[in-house]
Length: 151
Image (cartoon, rainbow, N blue to C red; front, side):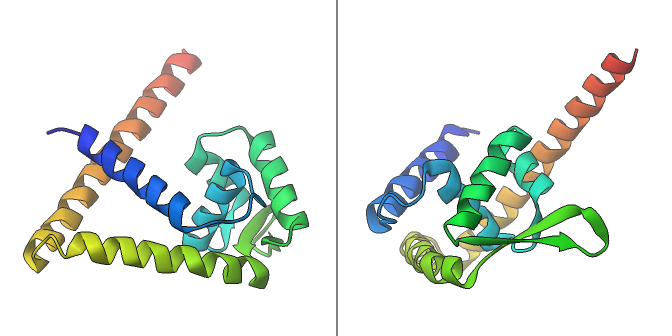
């Protein structure tokens, strides 16, 4: 298995996305990535964003504050856990990032024309298996590290 292929697909996607979507320098790379994440995981928690980006709480907190000031996101207190803030794109953010969805759909459509329906389904199934296994491996390593730390 050559995982470099996945790296190259993602690299080319980023280049395509950057080339076709101009956000006029309003956002830095971190802010842009957070908006894309929130686009797909609306109502996510600030802590989930920290974990997804494997970043420091302060870094994500500053980026979220900037995004909120620029009008891209809204943060609301979770009624079930008042310590947690839920993050969603604002109406302005949704309008700006609707273009990202269009570009992604265009990218996927072009790539999928190179595969049969069966190959596309197989690709998605295999990627889910690999993603689930990778997540389990990371979680297992983190648990082992926690156990070593507690010893």
